[in-house]
Length: 198
Image 1 (cartoon, one colour):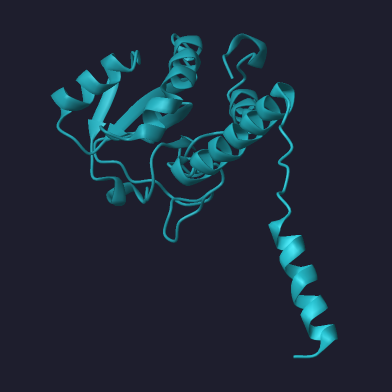
Image 2 (cartoon, helix red, strand yellow):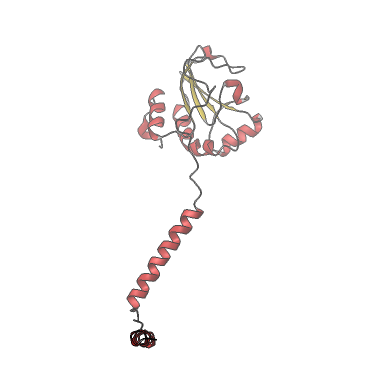
C-alpha cells in the first residue's frame, strides 16, 4: 500500500470517528412541525373521506322528458276547466323532492285560492301513501293524483309543469331549481318573489 493510500484511509477513518453533534430543535420549531403534520394529514384524510356532493339536477334534460309545446295527458284531468294548471310531479323517497318541498310549500300556499290556477300533485305511489308524503313535507295540495310518471312523460323528479287550458305544456322545470329558476317560475305564475323562500 502506498503512502498516499494509507493517508487517505487514515483521514477517512478520522472523519468517520468524529462525533456528529445533533442540533436540538426549539419548542417553537417542534410545535410548527407538529401543526404542519396535522394539517397535511387532515387534508389527506378529508380528501380521501369526502364523498362527492350529491349531483343536483338543475338543468338536466332526459330524452323523452315532457317539453314545452307537448300535450300532457293526465287521466281524469279536464284542462279546459282551469285557467292554467301547475302540475308538481314527485315521488316518495326522492331526496330532491324533499329538498324542494319548502319552496313548493311556500309557493302553493301563496297560490292557494287563486281562481285562474289549479295545483295538482302527481305521484306514482298509492294515494294514501302520496298524501302522507305530501303532508309530511308540509305540502297542502288538495288535488293529488296517482299516475305512473312515464305515462305523463316525466323522467325525473321533481318536475314542475305549467299546462294551459288545452293541455299544452307552456313551461317545465326539472330537478332541484336554482334561485334563478325559482324566480322565473314565480314570475311566470305572478307570485311576488320577495315573499317566497329561495
